Length: 580
Image (cartoon, rainbow, N blue to C red; front, side, top):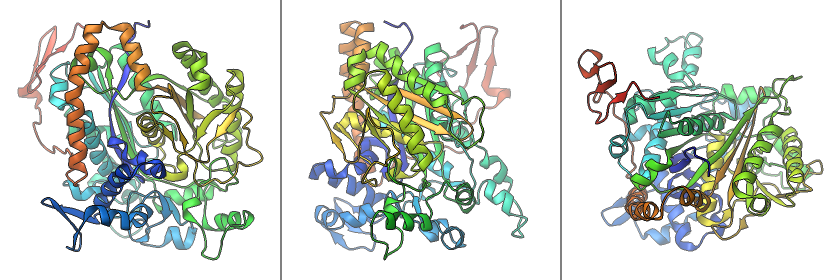
């Protein structure tokens, strides 16, 4: 048994175009047709509340216009409308394109927008925060609620410096409250705000979590790797726990890239699924073009496709060192067993693909073989492909996966691409993948690529089962999930995540039966509190944490330094200066 600590996934949360992440709700929206009616109603209720369509009134419910409703009947009658306001769809011009640049000049009408009507800035004093930071505040609170353990209880078990936060954006905050406002101010005849520069920085998501949510004095940072950014941060989190430098790590990413400037940038690179290309593709596929582009099918991974679609998302996972997780009774949703990142070597184009991703996928599959054995890798694993929906991606990524499947004797490797539902959220894109993978272990369903009706002729899939429909198995069927990301500049990363069952199998090899029995008893209370978070959120009572100007520590009065330790006011434990 490896003596290194396991990086266990003990909490997760966030928001993307499919909805709220905790309790697997955004994932369940992806596999909606594979759910029973009770689960479908929960998804619909959560979305309708997020969208502001309905709200509770005591034990009853009413619409936003004040009409009393029977909740179940309302949800069933309006199911299509509620879900239509989620995932990739026609761009809301009032929210994203008031000047008509995207819709009228660039003519790119599809985007993976947050559920219509959901405004995270309305849930706390946002104070001109860029949207990705608003989403950070909401998403991190969602993850803490799903954790089911009070954060002070966690911190009382560890030293103040044994927590780490790695989170941020790939491009930065480019809306009017961030770099966008800074760059446009003089041109538009206004003055830049003092907040524009500071709040536009790519690592600001981690900074907000430290300063306004956790009050952390531990390690902080953000490793930017284009579209692989979330996995770069996940690698840092895993290594921090394995090295012992941190016992709890928040890993995340938040990006709101649906702005005219970013859309225009991808359009200029011919990487975007714009309206003209969409209509041409629809005509080639003998699809209806009388009503213009079909936005819901704008991103078609591994099919005949024309480009990618931008989406927005904020995703966070809470990793915990295994002995601490057992002591606290944390619910185990999986384990980060392997993360690999590599560059491409010499390149002809900074935006072109290269060979680094062969290395990252191969290393993760090889590590899975060591931990699980080849039989489980061949029969009980699946892949979340990067799957951007571009012609270049469908050939290069499919070749990588097919070659490695052949090398390890995998005959029909299940592969999906959820950007077909969500669009490409840049930094947190693999966070979207990870949350969906955790959902598969909850329901046993891998979401199929709903927008692609047939695999393109130039896709390599001799050893792949590229899923065009939901694949349904028992919830404990899959032992491991592989997440893959290919980014501009040669930023490639892959991860191998173990299922909850396989994670607990490793813990049982490491710890005594009495220790595990004690853990399972404590975990029941944690799951009850996590369930309560979901019940409250279903009514719109979100766990939004924002502590501005609270318990601010002053160096002159609140820090006591000795040669062997540092004592900070409001922290139970000291920082040990002699600890290796």
